[in-house]
Image (cartoon, rainbow, N blue to C red; front, side, top):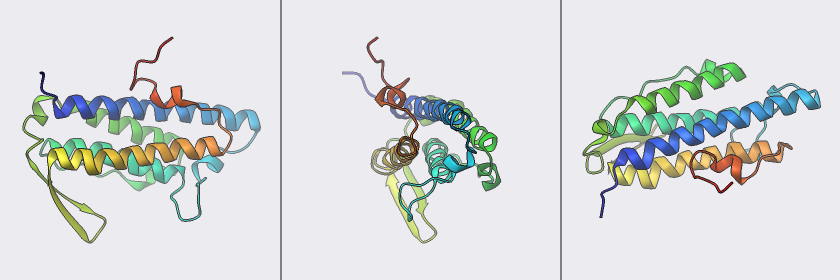
Length: 176
């Protein structure tokens, strides 16, 4: 039986879904132009009043991807300026920088990370400490999926024609 590496179960998922998120933004921009409304409407849309808008969901999804990979590699995650969330171009730049960070961390960088203790904060007051595999499987990946899925749902809720194939593209080889 082959041993799974932390890199093999993390980086390809992050990259595929972040690329998909970019593709959804392409479709959203086309949709907004076709329907003659400002893209800001979608970037500010939310599913419920107490939930983050689309730009906030992208902010958190990119943060989980870059922070997870950096922490697993024993690196301090870089901070991104919140100003890049103001425009679609800034959001696309944030996604691209996140993909670059994830791709820059090699399988060798993540060797031993399953057992390595990861220390992190959940919000300003909760300090957490877990082995890397628990951090990834129980915290980072579920949070990443939650925010990517919520971004998808916001776009769908606002009329964008997306389907499961749009969500899974690149992450799963779909039959033709």
